[in-house]
Image (tube, rainbow, N blue to C red; front, side):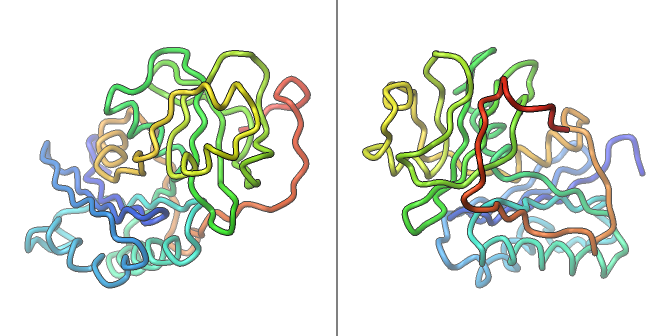
Length: 237
């Protein structure tokens, strides 16, 4: 593995179909809003990103967003990533799509040091996926796993400050019951961005966790799980 690996990243957990290649100081990206059409466009977008280069000659690691998110969308990204990795015996790196949204927001200078952040993705049927964290040191520090719930019952961590809310779950803002959430800064157009993830992984800003292709699986979130405040929880790796 070279000191600066060439990273092909892809994410289709949301309406965005996002692919990027960071290689040898160059960044190529395609990022399109393609609701329910990822499978029809992803291979052409991949060809555009590779620019007629072969996978073997241009990629060291395939990074894939594994959700949570659209059931069909997740399977598109994971299937493509696995197929590419198997074809060239390349390692894969799985990343959380909710975390990727936070990094995309930071890239757009929407976050400040110490911001409490709620990253969301519309789970359809009146529910949303969410992940709470604190932005600091160019990383999102997370103290609890992703959750799924109806917007009226979003679990809240300790602290009284209003958060920054990211992602398509913002569409449910009229149903938020907490004044703390209603007063939040909201950026509903933020989606996972493969270019941001490829850059972070290639530079070492986000550490690689390499695994074989067969271990790559979508991240599904259990419904109706219990919730404890952060002060009542143990640590989470």
